Amino acid sequence: MHALYGIVETAAKGGKKEGGGSIDSLLQGITPDWGPFKALQDPAQQVIGVIMAGVVLFLLGTAVVGAMHIKVGNSQANTMETKKGQTQVASALVGLFVVAAMVTIFTIVYGMGGEV
Image (cartoon, rainbow, N blue to C red; front, side, top):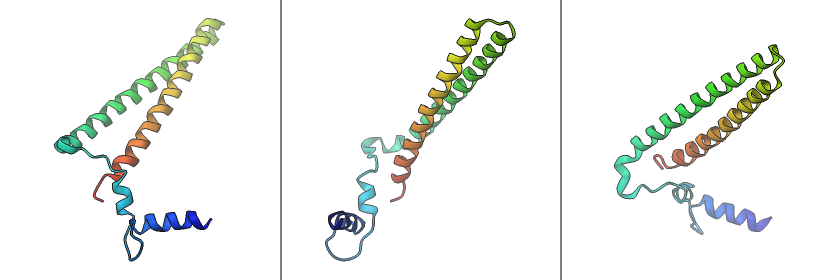
């Protein structure tokens, strides 16, 4: 337990053995480095956001179509149509989960890359 405490304390001090410091130096190790493409940072983040929003809308539309397949299949006692709808809804929800996880990861990483 003492070794872990020492590591956390060293990281919080910015890697210095003595003196103050902050967690900034630790966060800068996680910050994405855009290098010569620094001018493209904001437009790239906006394009990624627009693409992800489009994917979310498409997946929500797929889930709605799948729900309609389930409703039509149940009303006509058509098990094939119901199964098709269930598959569409399930795949759309899994896709939404994956996109939401990606958005969360990008937000955390690029948020740390802000004004540190």
